[in-house]
Length: 71
Image (cartoon, rainbow, N blue to C red; front, side):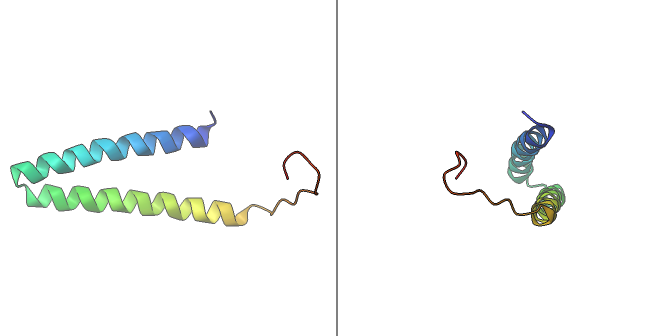
């Protein structure tokens, strides 16, 4: 696995832990913690997706000739 895959795995695990925390805040009726946690979760995902979008659009397009194994 590459570093990017570890980063995606860490983000997924962090999200699961965050959702567990949000559920606990919801059960305890802690509205401020719930809103803060949800906004943090959404903010981090938006940053991640934004970086992913920028990096993917800066990569040059790869063209594969017909008949090659990757085609």
